[in-house]
Image (tube, rainbow, N blue to C red; front, side, top):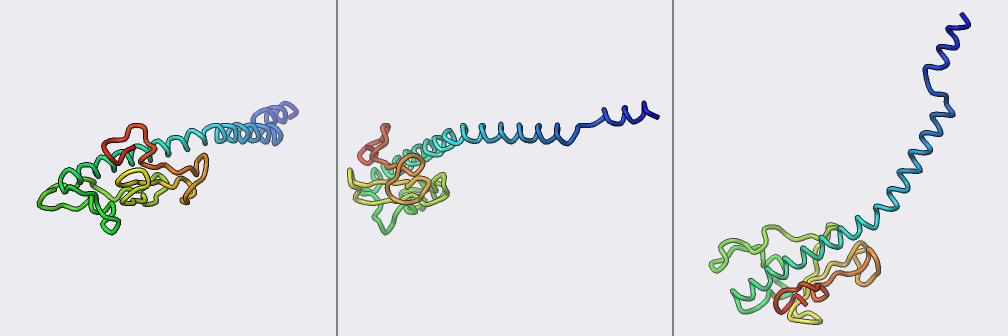
Length: 148
């Protein structure tokens, strides 16, 4: 009978062992989360830059067809419309930034004929880090008149 009790005790983990393992898993998860968060932010910012570049390309195509950029009233939705001159829309969907907000379009822009702005994680003008604005004229690989 003594042998049976000892066999039962060694089959599972004690509460202390289980608690230590859970604490270690929690600690590792926290470390991974803290070190991955900046990479996620950079990924979202890079996605916004790429999307702004494609919007700028569509704006330049619009300009080459109509000889003008969309007005502020027309905005970016003008790039999604089919017309006699543009049978296939220049953009297939309404562009949203990685934080699921609309891009701001201004015509004329502060540093060119137009500007496309993503207001970053906070959705407000200005900011640093994840909240920093991403603007079409700041892109290094701008195309044409409005990209730089």
